[in-house]
Length: 67
Image (cartoon, rainbow, N blue to C red; front, side, top):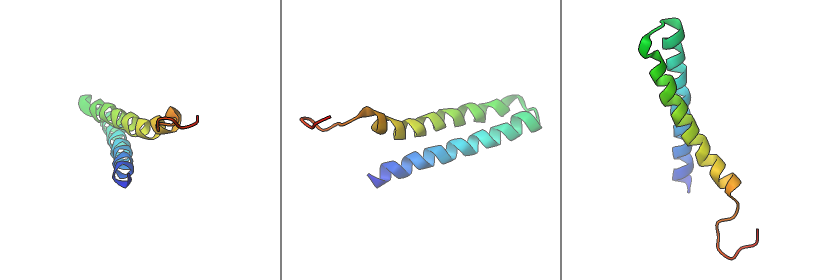
């Protein structure tokens, strides 16, 4: 349980870092490949966020339990 939570937090942190690095490269230096880290970071942010949101919005998962 704790390992999954730590993995989601790492995904979010790496995603935010990649977006920040990509923003500096894309806007400051106007590098053509500067948008690549932004896209990778956004994918990691969505994956990390989905890891938190699916259990919250999915409801109960135990069979026979009351909703």
